[in-house]
Image (cartoon, rainbow, N blue to C red; front, side, top):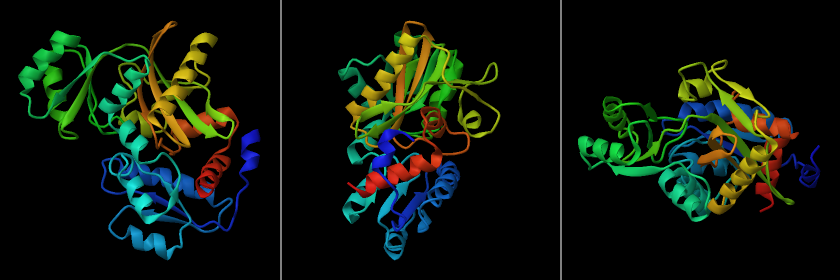
Length: 321
């Protein structure tokens, strides 16, 4: 057992509500995550209930006599600070980042502005708005970044709405598709390299990073929605095949990104790594997935924390706030 875990022994009488679902495009993924979290929590807490993020939630939280809320939500409004504000108003203790950090991290544009202020390594980008003509946007993108770019909705997760493009025609279609998810798009220069992710956990001894994980997918594919949540469609190399120096730098960046956003309890930072002396921070997830194929629990296992220990630790941290 990690030393910091022993200072947070479980209190079986705590009544925990795991909240999932809602109306986001990632609702079904969150329900899958919730099942795993509930199964693990029930090893230590007999009074655990799964609740849907809907209009009746406040009543059902009260009926359950909830003491700690464990959000297992992906995408807005569960991950962008809206749900966190709801819990703050009602006075519930909850796992994860607060209103501001959740909002900042969910908005890729704002998050990158914060990262830039703290001199974290970032991919070149620009922003386009829904009111801009697609042809005008394409011309502006190619002038600034070339035609090898990644198109991302500003406030979406699980790679939804993201398109990797190689020419102007693909760019036009990608922009149109992404606007179905958001009114603002982040366009980043496309960088070829290893897909890397690192989980981060807050402890009383400071913020710590899990081992670095490298994600691989079949040739001519990438870690999109299908490859994230379909068993067998991606491989996770833990620890990643990197030099000791680069591994240390990446873990330091993940911790700093967590801290400058003001995150709490947990986060997961994603990177692209083109070479031995080059790495770029892409984004930070404040409520990383907890499905059977998810990376955060896998990183925790590599760090020496079982899934049961992990969810119990976060529950106890929230309860003591």
